[in-house]
Length: 313
Image 1 (tube, rainbow, N blue to C red):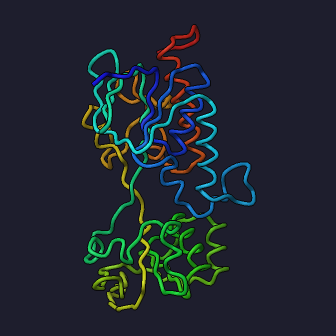
Image 2: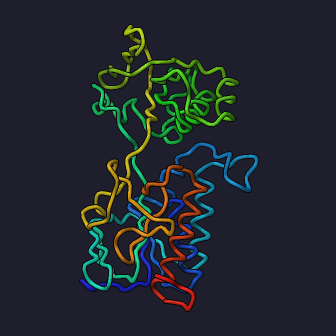
């Protein structure tokens, strides 16, 4: 199999990967963006984005990343989708990236592989996934029109999901294991305006059903009281897990939770390897921060590759 040669390879086509693609291509680097699914990442599954600069009236995650994808292609980067990243080798001068379709070499690599949904690990979750258990409100919400659902979580993603479902379902409840939400105040106000019933100090212990979800078992973490509730759908929104395993196997340093450790210039511990977006140790996981990190990473990758007079390793 012939090895393709590029200046810059970006792994992942979410907001970070697409931004890095724009900046890499515009700087004159021969740039390839690899994505195992379709461009957009988890951002494409967000029903409504209201805090991204320039869209005061809000924009769907899908529309926003479609604009980013078009921009990336017009800038000159090549995007190859449905191509799974399986190996990274940085032992030689050129960085070698292997996918399930081809092998590539590059002067620099930016890892922008994002995260995947965290599971609860409760009985019934795996068995009923796709049959009432969902991790994507935008994808599966329309299947629950006029039905009863429960959202599990207390952060921005959970609140956005509950608000979105309130406009589709007959009844939506939000179960949060603590007594205070972790979401932005503006979102909390919208949640209350939709009259979503919040179940405080409540944890999901079991999902029940046969061919589809029929109910859940909840427990109050303060009183220990257990109760059953009939629902048609369960939307799990309890955070994410970084897609960093392959990078870790290549020698890229990660923290105890698996997030890639980067410095202020988005450099990893390996020369010529950078990371940006949700897969990194950045404490704020937002599209805006992912875009900013990607700009830095692509600028650093250009400096590393072309060695302009102002670049300092």
